[in-house]
Length: 309
Image (tube, rainbow, N blue to C red; front, side, top):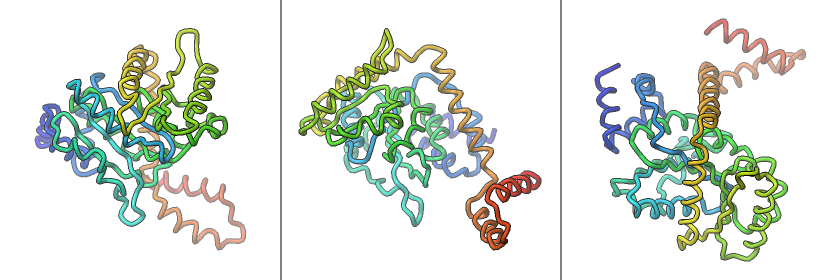
């Protein structure tokens, strides 16, 4: 392993936030040394990943900010990976300023990083698994991953997080039945945020019914009311998160989670040699043929690409 990468990892493991920022940049952009860094990472169970997901407008960033305040008061070390929509011009994070979290930027126990989704359908960044593992080596107690909020395709977070929190607002009350086959299925904890609004009780009751339908003899998914702007219900939410993390400390769950992560890494590696731009150029030529068939084209393209690589 290159000496500078070894030194970088040592600094990350000793709480150097500048080193952590550099390590994330190296991995996210596949800069020189990124493979050496990933191969040198230590497997650690200290840091738990909590996914905060839900539709746009659910108040996910405010929930994250309130959880940061709660855990900071308890002396916990917390990292936030906030995955934002991408700019169509430079693929940067559009919401990178994270105004609500600005109070924590100089806090030595809090690390905040915005990442662009770069078009990833699951509301995450293509390098989120690798980045989260780099952050886990920073010795944090909790790592909060806030997703873009793109709807049912956001279930990808379930393959990354130890605990997934699905945040909804009262206006979603009539939509519970229509979306429960997607994003609702991945919830470990339901949050009714902005619970001081009308229809909050109705949404709460609907979610409780849904949670009861999915309950086992030993466990029922908790439904928590919050008003994140006032930190109301945040302590109960934090307690529910800790209880869920303890529940998942068994080996079977960890194997399932790691298997899902491994599968995603294999998929990413297999797709490394494919480029949408190159495929588009090839299709532009092939489509002029009167015998063009998408499935034949795809099969031939895969064969040719595999021969080259």
